[in-house]
Amino acid sequence: MPSLRQLTLSLLLSVLGMLSITAQASDATWQALQEGGMVILMRHSLAPGVGDPPEFERGRCETQRNLSGDGRAQAEAVGREFRERDIPIAAIYSSQWCRALESAELMDVGEVEAAPWLDSFFRERSARSERTQSARERILEWQGPGNLLLVTHQVNISALVGSGLRSGDVIVVRPEGDEFPVVGRLSISAP
Image 1 (tube, rainbow, N blue to C red):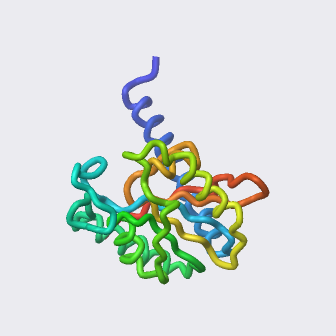
Image 2 (image 1 turned 135 degrees about the vertical axis):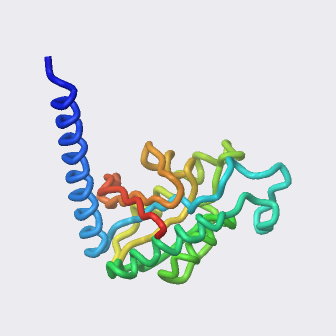
């Protein structure tokens, strides 16, 4: 039977091995972004809570769940990382929700265009199919040059790629024919 020390060492080596794989995956993802032609799906930055208040109105930020100070710092950090790595962003679309628009604008990587096809359907489940299909079509049409950045919500990303992201994280996909396989995921923390 292995000793506690051997088990601890084995666990430590396993964790270090996973970190190495994660670093390699991140490096490959950054390289793909530098080459262009990718689509970046970003979940809006940290906006504490779930859903929106009952008085929610599109276009009126005071009625919505908005970015926290940490969320604003997170969006700025993501943008800074993109700029420092010279990631070419050719077009940016965002959900019309204030937290998504503010995330995209704080990144400061280009002009942001509001896109209803990226709006959350958390409260509007009947809109899921139409919005997902519209986003899917836009993703599959993308050919670059540069990368397409889409800032949206957890439910939208889950519907498109089958899994979600933490606030402010990104998943990178490569449009290929009728599919868009995942190239990688990135998590960028605010300093």
